[in-house]
Image (tube, rainbow over all chains, first blue to last red; front, side, top):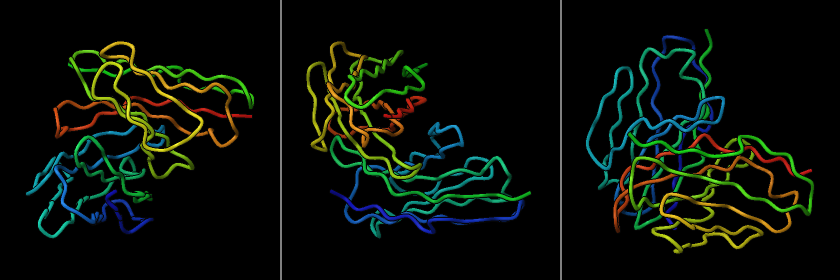
Length: 107
Length: 114
């Protein structure tokens, strides 16, 4: 299967700071998603982004499919941004998840 | 709009007991359905996926099985639970034939095997 690596594994930020999370994948994929898992375990869809750039409020994402990576940008972080961020890629009927980036935003 | 339900939300079961977790999707037809397990708060492991009624693909040989008796119902079962079956079980759905689109997750079931 496809290998999906996320970096950094852990990140601690002061409220208001910006951050960039990275997702590398080992082979061509059909699509890519970013999720935020909140402290209650719910996986929230952030972006469906097989290629290009999308923005949603303080969050934006860029996927460069030809170079097999995606970036998630969080600007002006808030404590509610805390949690684990996952990227997932898809080939055929299967989705492959990275091991996540655990983000803690300190007030 | 589409919604996905899972129950129970939490479960504590003794080793050797049976298991049945249920997932249902509303508001869509012929979805692709998935069962994942997450241990220790990180890393989702795909257990099973289904592209239609009665069609189940298993990703990891283990103590669990899955069934899809109806179009929008997906069930995860075990005849005898092991301690290693503890974890957070997530059901998900997507649409798309051949190349699925976005995947959406249910609220999960937290299983503790004692």
